[in-house]
Image (cartoon, rainbow, N blue to C red; front, side):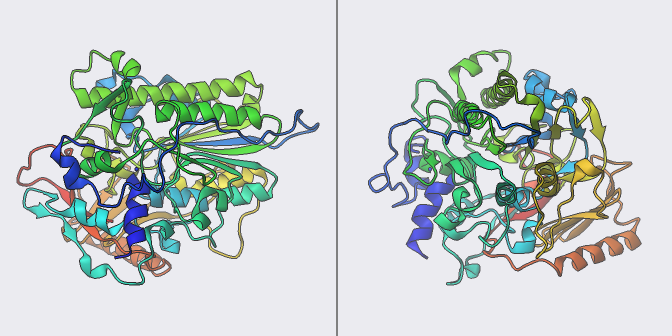
Length: 544
């Protein structure tokens, strides 16, 4: 296998050291930590390009900020009476985005894992339409985490036979350069485009944010990063011994970012604080010109790391990992509030469209239950818990405070909605699946999801899930059964056949995956990863 794929790929996918003594050696990839060749430099200031000293006269297009959380569960926010640890952790600032704008209550992620979901956000197209079917991982990572993985009698499958010479290097696994991103679209309409946070859409130079329409980018290029060095005196860490990915993360990640493709350097403090502070600085630098900011926090994705200050505020949470997780959510909420306050301080709050969502549902491997309540399922499942996501838009003077809409929408519609607000053009030389939902409900008749042999459609109130492992069709009437408790497939064979036909027809227009899904791993629907196996537990196999 290509050395560049292994060494650079895993490094950026997941970048620092030590997991309980000998475990570090077990999960560390030889040659992965390229610190001798690409050492993480000390923190240094980031200088954002300044806009005009004064705003130009006349009506100005709105600023647009897209805030994306990472693996945020539907029940992680307190808006609907939820919140971490039975509602102990409140999220007043995230909740305010919904209360001061519109809450789309039936909104879906475009995929149940990180990077395909983000690919849809950036392009307005089903990621499977251009071959971005799976989250990009290097082969050595896939092989390592698949060994011994499984629950009960169900073991992970590593498809070594799919590794062929035409599989691209890991850095080349991303959104193809020929795709038109929302950053490219609004930049052509006169916007200054900014990216801060997680990218996970390709790490080769031609696929990095600054090559995909962003004028400036402060990035974690891969799928995750350390929030603080493990031994930082301000860090409170929670490791997950049941999760092989977590072992791998602690053994191989770094506390590092890059600015416009620079050498890696340490952020100042906790990553969530750092990204928010730099977002405030970028907003101030661009206050006098229209800007689009894609603010992609990497919280609360693992590794679970809180600051001591936030952790100490939650002594009533007795379980350590849940307390750390809750502290990360509270910190994320507080810093989103700081970003919103900055807009008001600069006097540009009323002319800024702010959108908030998460890339997918909460993760089963955290070992924390009810992250996606009341829905079943997790990240890496197409049950509602894996793809039903918070989705709010706030735009004073354009969106009435306290608005709600129940029509089916989600990430796929971000492109056209943002483009319409910015006065940008939609590409006409390709199929664009996105619709402008601020102009009204989407006109499509169905939404689709696919990851390998796991395929799903929602058409009206009906949702069909088709899996190969186990070989099964699950049918739900979401109007009567929104939490997918009652499988109606046996009672409705004609409807199952109709929806299967819709899935097959849609699949004919999708592309062959650019890289293969090397792992199939079981995910239980109703319990987290650390729960004991019991016969009869429902599960699916997720391909990546």
